[in-house]
Each structure stands twice: as C-alpha cells, then as structure tokens.
Image 1: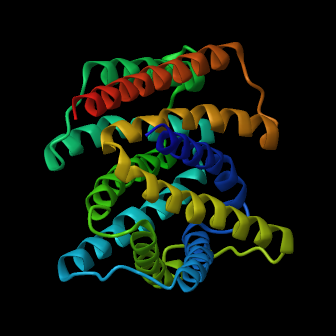
Image 2 (image 1 turned 45 degrees about the vertical axis):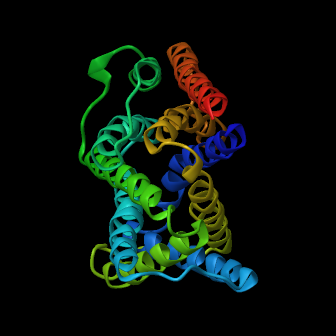
Length: 297
C-alpha cells in the first residue's frame, strides 16, 4: 500500500510539472495539433511495451465500450482541453482548478463505486484547498479571475475525474498496459481529424529542440506516468488516490520558478505548507485504515 501511494505521488509530481511544460509547448504548437502529436508518441511507446511484453488481456464487448468512452473523454478531450486552456490560463491557477478533482471524484466514487468519504479525508481536502487558495490568489480573492482558458481547465478537471473512475472499474478485469494502450489508440485516432479542423491557424514548430521536448514530455508525462498510475490505482480507493492531485499546484509553482522564472511569494510558501499538510493528513488516514483491515483478517 505504501509503495502504491509512493508511485501515485510520483505521477502527480510529473503531472504537476506538465502545467509548465504545456505552457511552453502551446507557444510553439496549436492545441489540437499538439494533442495529436503527443498521443502519437505515447501510442508508439505503448506499442513498444506491448511488443516487449507480448501479452495483452482479452477485451469483452462491454470493455470495448468502456475503453472507447475512456479514449474519447479521458484521453482526447482531457488532453485537448488542457492545452486549449493553457493558451491563456496561468499554470498555477490551472493547477488550482484541477486540485478540485478529489471533490468530484469522491462524489462519483460514492455513486458508482460505493466508496465511503471519511471525515479525515474531507478535513485533509479542506486543508489542502486552503493552501491552494493562498498559492494562487496570494490571499486576495479578487486576484482570481475566471477567463475562457480556465473554463477549459474545468473541462480537464471533470474528464480527469471520469478517467479515474473508469480506470478503477476497468482495472478489475484488465491490466494497466491493456487499458492505457487501447484508450490512447482511441484518443489518437479521434484526434487526427480534429487536429486539422479545431485550430485556426494550425501552428507547428520546425525546430528540433521543440520536437525533442514534445516527444520527451509526451513519453514521460502521458505515457510512463499514466501507465504507472493505472498499475497502482487498483490497490487504493479512487477517491483517496485522487486527493494526491492537491500536490500539483505546489509542483507547478516550483517548476514555474525554475523554467519560467516566476518568483515564489511568501503567501505561496504558506499555501504550499497547507497543501503538503492536507495531503499528509489524508495519507496517514489511508495507512491507518489499511492497518486495521489487515489486522482484522
């Protein structure tokens, strides 16, 4: 259990960095084209892994429908809305929006997966969200303005919550590589026509460093991290695993300092302490429940 949470935390750290990576890439590639190209690199990576493993689970008719839905909503729409939003939205502010994913995921998990929302998890979420408030608004609510880009980030948040729930359900019957490969193939196929119709104008960089950065981040952020997430999420409740996404604004803040030279203020540091405290509070609760479960068997 502890190892699973460690890997899930690593995935969240990688995805937190993706806010800054995406902000850099949308300056060189238009959103739909960027989505298609990223998915192309991801699919190539996963096909290589599948060829090496030489084993994929058999998919039933019911699973095919779920994978199609996951590929369209959890892969294509999720990634495209993310890049579309980052054209105008601030990376750290975007991280704030996505940090509300645990709230929606917990609600969906309670409906579809019959999971319980505990008091300690709620307290941890509130503490972390307070920290995110300080990080993004610096304690001043008026500094948070709702713009078109942030609305697309809300779409990203909703589709991410749906992805978590659907992956949790599919992982009971299929292994992580099967789920990740097939859903990304669906997402890539869907993205091809949209790459040439949604963007006006279409922007594609012709510089090798930009393509290398695109390929590298695609493989690590959306390929390896997603595969690791799908492998470990089966060991924890979906609503509890998703609360780790509260770490993403902290990661985005640090990466913004390193890559975009965006200074970190005192309010952001205080907020980051709340974020880490809220996540640790929730993690401690998970470990405690796990120990009780083991001892009762």
